[in-house]
Length: 197
Image (tube, helix red, strand yellow):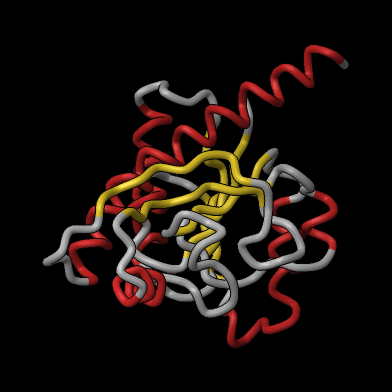
């Protein structure tokens, strides 16, 4: 079994999907820690499940945020999952958790990724560019913004009459599936590594 730290910034619906998958034994990992970079409902979801939680306000921690997160997770978590986490990780945490941090992004990267591309900004760009297909991507986190190696993607169609909220709803449904699938892939990969040691 692997231990996971989940980083969030919002309502925590993707966190809920992970926790449900744990309860149903769809994944073998356990969520041991949830960290938010602001006050958000996702922390309440974690507390209700008895999970250790922290709020590290990004405005207060600023350049110390990544290091502070690293201090909390390094002796507790095997993997870090960014599930709607809006801050950018940098520094030692990226080295210490190389190929063990994954991020869920609401577009089909490399399209509509990078600085400023999050939430409704992504879906607005999809509409403005008249995309016929969009979706979500789970990728490894590296030193860039949304530039890490892609683990998997799931797609949805963009209909002529769709508004931002319509696309958001469609993509979120796929996000809930994608994040669980990506964790399963990590488990398989690292079980194989551990068996070779």
